[in-house]
Amino acid sequence: MALIYQSTRDEKNTVTASQAILQGLANDGGLFTPTTCPEVELDFDKLKDASYQEVAKLVLSAFLDDFTSEELDDCIRSAYDGKFDTPEIAPLVKLNGQYNLELFHGSTIAFKDMALSILPYLMTTAAKKHGLDKEIVILTATSGDTGKAAMAGFADVPGTQIIVFYPRDGVSKVQELQMTTQTGSNTHVVAIDGNFDDAQTDVKRMFNDVALREKLAAHGKQFSSANSMNIGRLVPQVVYYVWAYAQLVKQGEITAGDEVNFTVPTGNFGNILAAFYAKQIGLPVGKLICASNENKVLTDFFATGVYDKKRTFKVTTSPSMDILVSSNLERLIFHLLGNSAAKTKELMEQLGADGEYTLADVNQEILDLFAAGFATEDETVAEIKRVYDGNAYIEDPHTAVASAVHQTYRQETGDETPTVIVSTASPYKFPVVAVEAVTGRTDLSDFEALEVLHEVSGVPYPKAVDGLETAPVLHDTVVATAEMQAEVERYLGL
Ligand SMILES: *Cc1c(COP(=O)(O)O)cnc(C)c1O
Image (cartoon, rainbow, N blue to C red; front, side, top):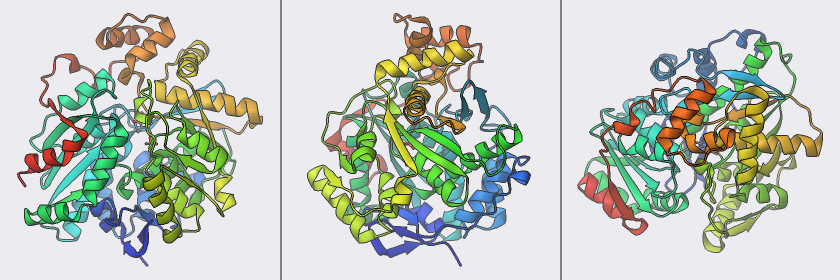
């Protein structure tokens, strides 16, 4: 029997995995979420010697069960290939007191590549399966990393268009240039005069706009999403949790069955939610530690049960986590409320109307899996320095937030469970902060900092930043948040 993906806001709105990937978001505003857990045999005596692709096959076949074995093989082979700069795909590095799972070896040097290198293949395969004759328009809001990784995946993919909105003042110079120099005749990049939440809110609104959907259909087009609201983003992220555990067994750091904690630098709650699903299929997880920067809505939420977005949005040095409305938390809320769509819908409507909601009557076992904390800007810089001094290893600011939160968590709880720090970006993506933390220099431009970073880290330049300074800028559109839909209609000729 096929696994059922149900909207978090309507129990009658159910689809299969491939349909969920095609649609992206449920058109009632909810997110498609598995209502039962697929069965997967996690035999780490075997998995410790499996390749990343083999682990991917195991996990994807369980969750995406209406794809054939051949279809998944094709998608996996096309996704996890030489685009990654190491055949391991996601190396696990041992440092003093922690393991860093490096998810930044793909083409845009951030963890979004782990899922976005496979999503276009899953989506075009799903389109073929369902005989879809419409052009798929990927509409995406990005806090900096999703946009580039999605375009790298979808550029020149036949039958698709991709439109990316990013906050003009909310991304690093390297992130911005990666996007504005993007080639591909089907890519369109737009800066907005607003923050990530503004972009994400309006993208969600467009998805749910019935008139706009009809207009698109009349032009032979339909929207889908490359944000982590799409289940096709989440499922490939489950893979690396299983993989990381297998590496720990392989390296003799743990015995199969031992518990492992994961600390995840969190923004939209997609990455850590994938870890939750890994636990559901039987991965021996102790705690999932949710790490935030100074936009610490989630830290407060786990401490009090109140989700309150009514606060000042802060632009930090870990911009991909500058988020006040974490979309994927809706899926956890749904599970915490016993998979009740009615209760989830009520809370999400409260969030829209009042800017807050309070959780009650939850599944305590699920809630107890999570711990949460945040790191200030100063603590983040200090953590980059601490890790560098102790290991000659440079973390990017997002990873350092997680690393710092883990230090505090360990001191406060005494929990000495082996811990994986989910390392979401290369320091080359945020060179100014990394260099300032390590050398104290504050006078460098982004490209000067890249050079210094290369000298002090000894890590080779990733392809992603090589030549970026001189690449032609191909996208320079800036619009007000209120003009996003007009820009979409103009670009698509609606
Ligand atoms: C997107 C991103 C995050 C946050 O991940 P979520 O799945 O949105 O919680 C953290 N770090 C980096 C570098 C990212 O690009």
